Image 1 (cartoon, rainbow, N blue to C red):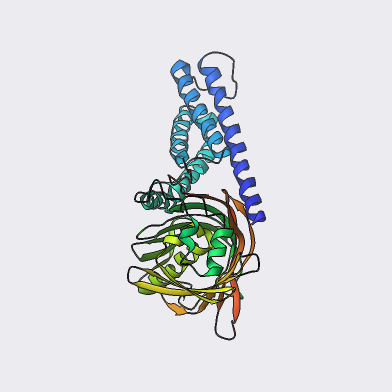
Image 2 (tube, rainbow, N blue to C red; image 1 turned 30 degrees about the horizontal axis):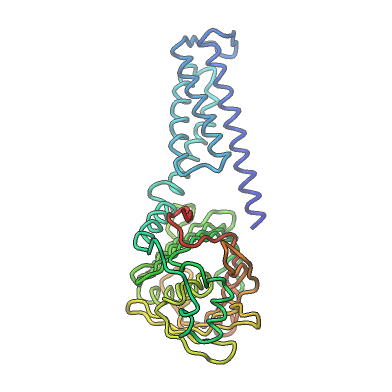
Length: 388
């Protein structure tokens, strides 16, 4: 993951440097147009109006460089398109002297095009924001505080876990926003793909889960969008934010993601457990069984706790493993062993874990995802993760 971040950072700053030089060169046209200096490199007359054109081009190109340098907002590609267009018009007025700048403008247009498909209005990122906003529309704006009385009906190991999480005395969890990173692979012999992701879950009569992952495979960007709402799930994957690779949906997908939603509940939102549609039963002093129902889906799992009352594993027989193309699903035992916990947003939460499949021989048990929780905020008000 660190290597990917380093490569992307270097590439971003190379683009910034090229655009800064490109933008500054435009000031030669400004200087000649306004008569500030003789510019032998530009032989064609420019004039004051031309100077204004070159100044506008310089400003837009440099603005694009700044937007990219500060990890550009979602609309940066619009500025880039304007910059390339105005710059090319300026270059056309002095074509014989400035035509080399067209190369940079072509690169800028290509970058803007990629910006459009990756973060523009038709992108997975835009869909994630829309769905996350929708998921928050019906949550309780002033949830009641969790009390000891709310834990009375829970099995002792689970009640101790909710207490350990710091939920008692705090508002019930009705939503959370999380940033994560890690690596993922399709099988025990497949190459790992580093990824970063962001997730928003909401809780209430019908839980919703909105998760987006940006990964890298063989140096190419891959974007994955998981949506779950009204007991229906989809998983779509695009290469280069443009080429569809996976489009998974259907009853098997719905059931598998219901298990994931149950897992999110107990792993990341123990403050939502008292009101969750789950039938709990104690197995022994460190194990609890839960049967989670959402709409027409009912799934179960066994939770394992350690001596400190932290959740350390979640095992379910009800999740289905998708094929590489997302067209077929196979029932396999699924578990998420958790290895580290810490305080985050005033609550104790897991920070390091894995997702494991128990595949038939010769695959056997293997980890297909390793994830690290970077940040989490509870009871958020918007898709940006703000609680205010």
